[in-house]
Length: 293
Image (cartoon, rainbow, N blue to C red; front, side, top):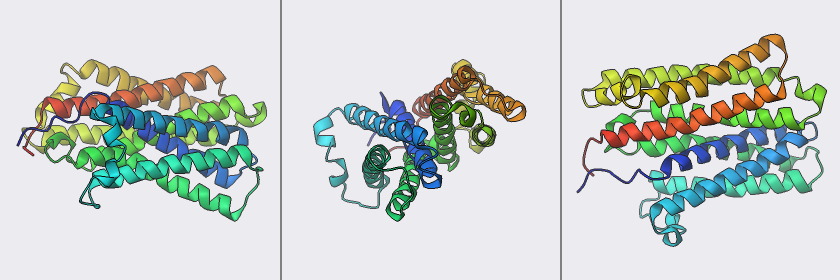
């Protein structure tokens, strides 16, 4: 038996791209269900982008295994079909198929409602949301690392994924839709304020849990709050990922003005913070692994 050391290398990028791809897929499908004709300029690029994010995530995951060709049959290699690895492999496969189907439908079919199109959209929303949640559950299931063994991790990753997905889709919406319609970003700004506020609360709860859960998790909290990882945590996760997008969305919500450059800047900040969050959560887990497997 040995201490868990498998979580390393490019895995944070996979978790980031998987969550971003899942949330972008879910949001694009939701818009397509609501009004496929009205949001066609947004749904098409977002659906293809979700597929690209997921494909890149799979490539990174396979590369990180060291044996990518054998890993292509990963879901067929588990004797326990109820394990999170098996569920994750099938969820990722379903997300790839769903995003490809939505991309083709949005690009090749007429922009009008139909029962089959609505069923596809609802399926994509469910699969995309499941993919977002799974990226955190994958870590929580690693019982060898105490700093991940809490439901706050999948909650944090899910909120971060939808926050970054909302930032990306709102950028596409602002850039692609007609000028008068694109300026009406009240719903997107309200959604962004809600998600960043909720994510900030969960980040605080997670830090509090690390500090108070047990003596073994306290060093991980100190590492983020005032240790060697404090600068990237406060600068990228809190400042870039939460404070700046929250402030820009709130200003847009109050003033009803959303310049393109400001929306894009907010999106870049949100994506940077979401990616940094994965790297730091994995870093504290690997720095203080507890337990044997």
